[in-house]
Length: 333
Image (cartoon, rainbow, N blue to C red; front, side):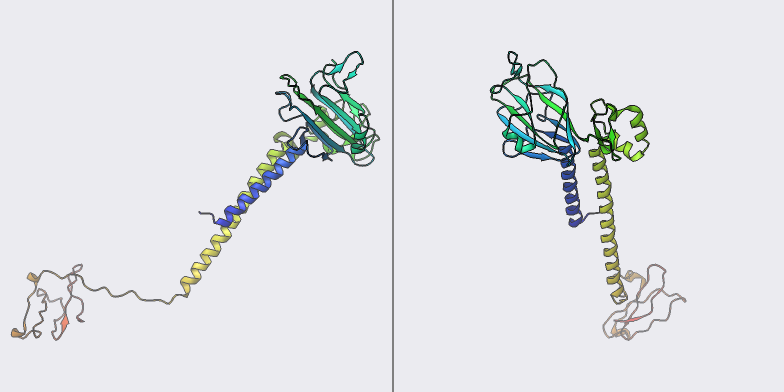
């Protein structure tokens, strides 16, 4: 079975579209502050929750030098934003005498309230290396946070960046959210048991809670394989089904068209085959016009056999049949 050009183009279009969808989903759930456009624009994200890292190879290789990148995190009105650090390793620039990060030198991560408006003011929180204390969780007072990561031009081979999880939450209990066990946040139910610890006390990933949630088979498969893998599998199955339907439709139309053309043609009887050889003349007697023959044209006389029909002259030729030893009826030459 051969695929037409239309099938191939359709398949390529679907693959490209789904690849873009998977890439988009992956990039949103795992955001990197130092992306290729961080110096040119401010990135705004509005997810309920996401993992934000300094760069793609966080924890394994140093971050980029001479970068000043800003990310805005926006929550729905009336909600707040929680930052929970998982990894932190920046170039040491902590001023131990003044017990603060150096405002001039060194790499630092700065948190601003009120988004772009707050960038004109001093940051609410500044994190840098060398303090000897792992960053504590941070909860916003508004529904917009500005995250700014500044790195100078001093190279270092052992500063591997940072990673934190942000989660939007409500301060009061409501029917569409899950209250963490410590009572500090009521997070959206969609981020519960998603293999990401959104609550500061990890209560949203408790074993008993997630075992009850895993009774839903579909959700269990999605959690086990990952959303990206499920999307790819569903896309592959859908692509195969589409190609099969299109191919069957094209084949059926082609068969019907050929049948109609075949049925519309008039019937033509096959031509009568002409003899291509004769038996040896030793089995026959030839006569000439001198012996009362055909006026100069020889003709062949088969061996005498009472089963043969009588031979008549007068411009007729007798054809000998090799298969059954009989003579066909005379035909006019």
